[in-house]
Length: 186
Image (tube, rainbow, N blue to C red):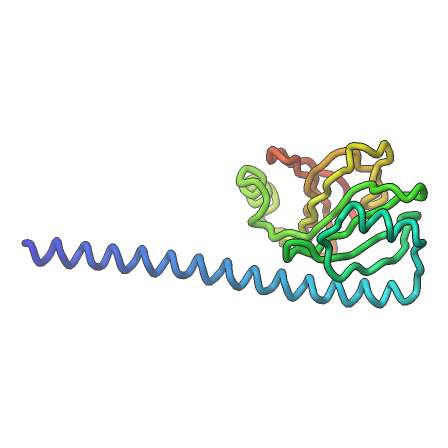
């Protein structure tokens, strides 16, 4: 009887370790994919920098706003001066308005970095969709200008999740607390 109980305990412990290792492997793979995407985005931004020149005032303001930033790449788009850069091993984009003031920052995230409640709701309400991208927007509260994402003004911090199914792409807006709302179809 003792042997059976001991054998059952060993099998249970082995199974637990196997599943724990699988989760770790999946997380490491996801992190490698994120880093690869970050490097590709940085290269795209460098090519954009060669086409568009950003003023010296924005460059100085950026240096003040993000003193620990690495590899800044400057470009312009949609009325904003955009700086793509690395900080704390994360790829970020800082958006500056025509007055050379920071409007906000964005960065891409893995779906698993959304609040748990949001993940569950998206998987439940959009089961046939695949998650294409997740963007976190952080607004500069000191600047009254709103960021423009998906051709819409964004006044507050939050996440934007693109989900795709066939030829349909939907953008969902997720609050920091995990509430999910339909934002728009692309």
